[in-house]
Image 1 (cartoon, rainbow, N blue to C red):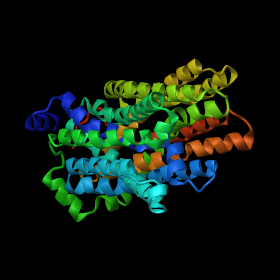
Image 2: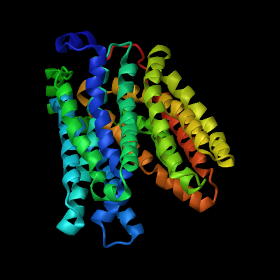
Image 3: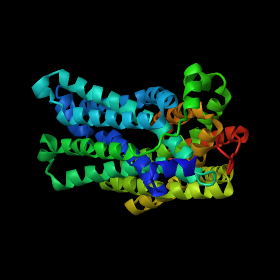
Image 4: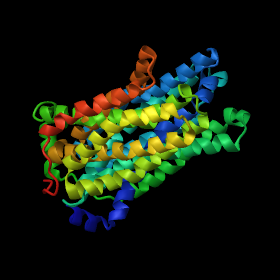
Length: 428
């Protein structure tokens, strides 16, 4: 598959990876940039509420994107298994560009009244749907493009791209806030990152059009006879459940270390907001670099070996890392802890990311990835910061989130026992 598809498309290995993952990075940039301007959006679109409620309403609209991510993953994953991975990926990037355009041009409450927040809400629904639908077709196409000895390395780049998108969002938000006054950011500066998202999307779309479709006609006809979603929930239900819980440890780990920890350091350890942003960028960049390395190791030493070693190391080190940071809080230590943990987060996410599509047949593959990864990330991962905050408030123990991550890693080691390791085997 790798040789024929590459030759027919006329693309090098690097071009295939860039064409597939550039759009993913842009989409996750678009999806997360909203959170960096939640305060300004709250002031402009919910002005009748108190400052606290403005922020809560704005964050609530942000959270809506996570709610619809599983729906987007399932619907667009099934679409990719029916009509092709390439068409599904073009669709997601078009939807993300549309959502950015809606937010960038949305009239404020002062101009449009109650219509204003509903426009932003609609845009976030589209963003969440598109972000959920991106991962399954993208990972599937990378896995099917790769050779038998490079599948983990190829698949790793889709996770790496999500980390790059997060870093891009944090970087652009920082530049806007540094270069403009608070008044200018509130008046018009907050729209700049969304305009950039609109401009960048067509670039990713044009590059993706050069990719060769990897879904054969026979597979497509098989999907028409038996829907991919139905097959994933009946014939392959055991694999779907095992895959979802095998993803649990990685989903919880990445949301706690990359999202919760920076805000936890500000709120509980009283570090500066700058420390939070810097550590978030550092964590994202380490994830970006560590993911391909994890893919290379998984191709060489087997998926299960890299997964189990990384998960056990994270399980054993998460509590000491949190304790050290709590005892000596500083921006540099926060960055060091975030970077260290990110290495082993990547080490446990990438192997599962390639194991799951290797076990699903071609006509169910994109849907299978969506049901396992996106559902796990949205529910187990997406609610992790809330659960961690609740544990701190309930117990009064600032180290409680570390126990939560350790428990998630321990639980998610169990289903790995029943997952077959297909390192080096022919895919289809």
